[in-house]
Length: 433
Image 1 (cartoon, rainbow, N blue to C red):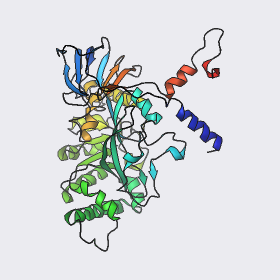
Image 2 (image 1 turned 180 degrees about the vertical axis):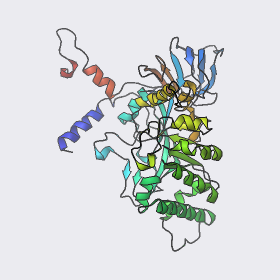
Image 3 (image 1 turned 45 degrees about the vertical axis):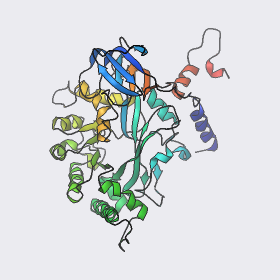
Image 4 (image 1 turned 30 degrees about the vertical axis):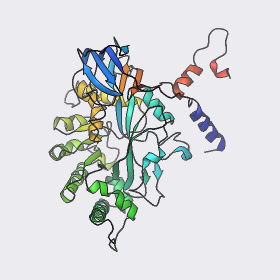
């Protein structure tokens, strides 16, 4: 990249960074809209959502509004919980073409499992601003690309316009298996599984004797091994990226040696072929929504019906594993609804499809009791849409995070305004400096 190109990219990033901080949370009632709870239940006509102290107090039909609580009229609109994007790079990338602004790679780092992405989250990054304007209020930020199968500890963040984005730091540990894991471990899946089991053994040994001497054949740094202690003790979920059915079953077998593991399967292009095993194990899946063609050998069984078939088999499946291109999140869910109308295809009902991008990811993250729905006690993350949120033509009208209304202007909206059609006799805004 030339210096001129870098300067242009930096200038593009800086446009729109003057987003004002949102006001403090306020009590409110959103009335008259079509309310979607986000838990897989059907939308509620003429519903009310009551927010107090930044949390949902009640949502549904016939909810009484206490005297003095400000009312937001949502008649003719849809009211939903904020979208939850799982396994994403939101906050780690400012301009993807500028390496210096990209914190997704650490392949030359000394550490791997100990890396904590929360330190690099930039709440002013334009992908975060754009995602918020498209209804995303929370995200599980994926860890880094390292030189090992362990890619660090991810963070759960909110997409608010303040300077404190991290909801939970070190929220999960991320492991790369399958074809990529084999390459990182020495060229074979056999090596990847041996490295993983050995690392978990080392962590368990340190957990049992924190002050004890380590064995002579230890492969991990002490810091990396210590970072895996919450994994082997069941305090931190282990996200395992695998695609083919055989790899999914191998990942599930880890529970035999490490019974406290809180596994979450990521990707799962061939999940439908291992659906019975996943359902029996009760392990949630964050499925890549459109891996419908065999782009790699480990995806030979990929199909658009993957998510629907897993759900029909009783798998706890939600959508995840995509980059910060937030507008497509609702389109992915909408595609699953469209599949139900095709012969011999398997998709999701509208209610279940929306849950797959709201409460489903939150539950997979172990935070379903705090995020992802409009059930009482959940965070006051609310979005008002001008139409069906799973329709590509619908847009976001207003967004609240923890009961605080958020600005929706972004670099994209400013560009639209700048290059809008000029009035007769005036120059375009591009020339107005």
